[in-house]
Length: 111
Picture 1 (cartoon, rainbow, N blue to C red):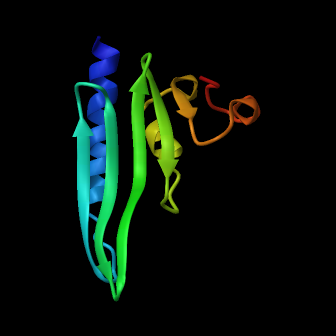
Picture 2: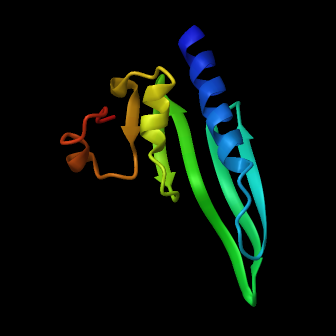
């Protein structure tokens, strides 16, 4: 349980840091969505860029089976590397946005 608590805190802190970065364009709100009961965590952009409606997930992370699943990373940053730098072993990080077949070729967990 201690590991799960640590992972929840790390994921939330990383997303809070990303969530404090407001887009440089448009009137876009940054929503930090933390479902701590089911371990789903997201950063979402909602608003207007000129005449275009913006509604998109920027980062999506789940915790499943005591592993951190990076489901989506719409940033230019390497969030998996941020997790490793924070002390998460690579075998506890799954790149969920990659196909199960391709995960075996990464340095991270397959699932």
